[in-house]
Amino acid sequence: MPNMNKISHFLVISIIILGMSQSQSFSTPGAFSITRLHYAGGGDWYSDPSSLPNLLEYISIHTDIIVNPIEQRAQIGDDIFFQSHYIYITGHGNIFFTDADAQTLREHLLNGAFLHADDNYGMDKSFRREIKKVFPDKDWVELPPTHEIFNIYYKFPNGLPKVHEHDGKRPQALGLFEGDKLIVLYTYECDLGDGWEDPNAHNDPPEIRDEALKMGTNIVLYALSQ
Image: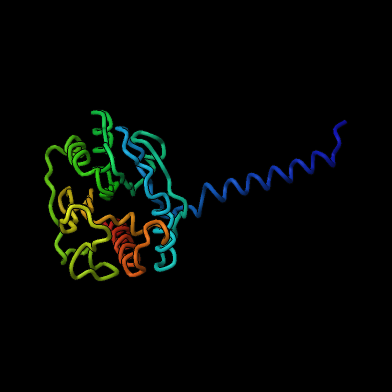
């Protein structure tokens, strides 16, 4: 007959490990989450690793939104991808979507998902090329400072803030719409993700980081309000 003390000890350890695993993988049911898109093409889709956890923490502290503090990661077509309503894409290098990827992403966005593409310098050419596969019938529209996304919670009277200098161009918030609904936001020449990173990652002034985090909060709130 098995030693009951050993079995009980094993069960206690198993329950503790299971609880730790669940606390790391799941949060409150219905909590807001952000999914980072793992794309092909060789670009560093994983760049700025502390950015999304920091943004989610900021949102949790400064709003009433319940968040999942751990970013999700998915490739187009994964189960997590289809469960994700807020998708984030960034990087410095090449992005590539197959035709099947483009069609799947298109359908997911038209069915209610939201995509935030954040220019981390170096992704602009490939992102514009690949998103044209997804929406060949749509053109970018620049969002003016009067747009709700700049006023929904924090006020940005001059529009998108500048975090890092790239090519000496002004920051632009560019959108793709389905009717009146913003389904893709491209924050270009801004580098919000760098501003969301840990303070010692880029040594940005606190006020710059705060502006970036506030803008990220506005983007999330606007996406949720649609």
